[in-house]
Image (cartoon, rainbow, N blue to C red):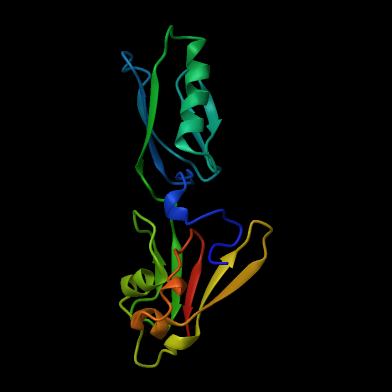
Length: 173
């Protein structure tokens, strides 16, 4: 099972808004109500007329619909669009024997091999056949997914080149 607690490859699912993302909310023909809003640490944004709205963990479409419902009470035939203009909530860590350990925040989903490349690649001391992806499940358990980087590079086990999810840690011993 490549993606525990997930129905499919995360790259094919709608993006879920997270803390620190920036949203652009546009109310057609009403620039005073249009704004860019950063998602706060608590997962909320604040909008004129609407007030505070919980957005983290939701898709842009569901948030857009809720904003339109709130705006309808104040603006006749309100047409609301919402776009995620900055993805800042997709973060993961690469630790261990890589050139540049740390937290990474790319603007797109990456695979294990891409995450290791972002970290400058394995050092000469790395045990690349024993890499572990540590992922927290929806129930809060730490799931350890073994990865053989050498098999990925050779093309024998490309199925192990899984997509890194937000909050994952790639451990290169």
